[in-house]
Amino acid sequence: MENNENVYEIARKSCVICNSCRYCEGLCAVFPAMERKREFSLQDIDYLANLCHQCSECFYDCQYAPPHEFNLALPKQLAKVRAQSYTNHAFPSFLGKAFGANAIVTTIVLVIALFLGFFASGTITATEPSRAGDFFAYVPESYMIGTFSVVAILVLAALFMSCKNFANAIELKGVNAAAIIQSIKDALKMRYLGGHEGEGCTYPTELRSNVRRVFHHFTMYGFIFCFIATVLGAIYLHILNIPAPYDFTQLPKIFGVIGGIALCIGVAGLFALKLKADKNIVDENSVSMDYALLAMLFIVSFGGLVLMCLKESAYLPCLLYFHLSTVFALFVMIPYSKFIHVFYRFIALVKYNMDEQEA
Image 1 (cartoon, helix red, strand yellow):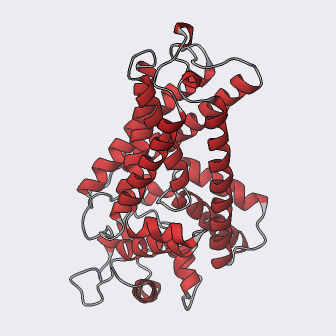
Image 2 (image 1 turned 180 degrees about the horizontal axis):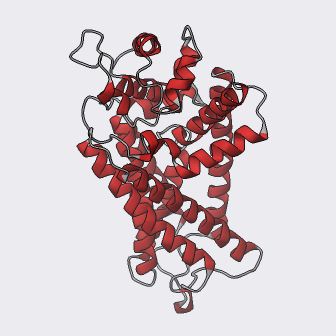
Image 3 (image 1 turned 135 degrees about the vertical axis):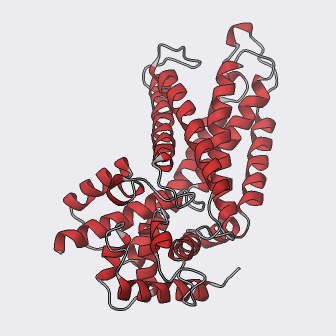
């Protein structure tokens, strides 16, 4: 694996060449942002890398791409910087390094540790037939809520500090409401995944297609629906005093099922695209981090659907322990995995839209 300094220096040199050429200036937000610079610091490269959606149209349009001696493969080079930025700004840093070094092994160890914790705290059989399908019959309510509360607090603190570190690094200052609103619109529409003039994204190959944008929409909105279902479940239990399990007429189940199905579709599609991606545009050193996140998102969403279907079977205890372990592991991964790009990219979009306002 290339060292930190070399990764940034290669990307910096490519940005200098791009800034001299400017053939790609209308492709996405990266190039207008780049053209405001005459020289590029490491902070500038972090900003541009996280502004990039790796649509790779610039690679296929570039006259200096390999085998040219300039070896300008900007999507791949910025992907390397992005992966490094997740480690550079992580809090605490040792967890960022662990995920960066071997995301798949770290994730597996985390899931196993959490599974053993739930297994040790729970009971394999529900003592009352009337509690069939009741999760709290297998995992004590106090343990589940207490564990989730601790994990949530630690993850939110780590996420806040990581985002703060990144925002400080790219010198984001004086944020205004207009820039935030525009950035939210851009993010919700996946504006820059539409390619030049909405014709489609040149990923996984040079053929234009909006399929990647569609799968990203399924993934994003599926995750949002699942999060809403979790929040609604907490409201039903702690405010309305309506315990789980919920039927298909109740909001937690409605949002959960729709979100779970959408996540499965979106993640499976993105995984398939990544397997077919042109090797010239992906960073082979950080691809394990991408696969680890996609695998976890699919396991969590599919596992939730399986748990719903088998909630009154003899397999419920182990299915429940496994599902809770993967959900908790996913939340722990958020500040240190590819998931953090969601937040870093939004911060980069805010900076870009503020610069657009000033321009």
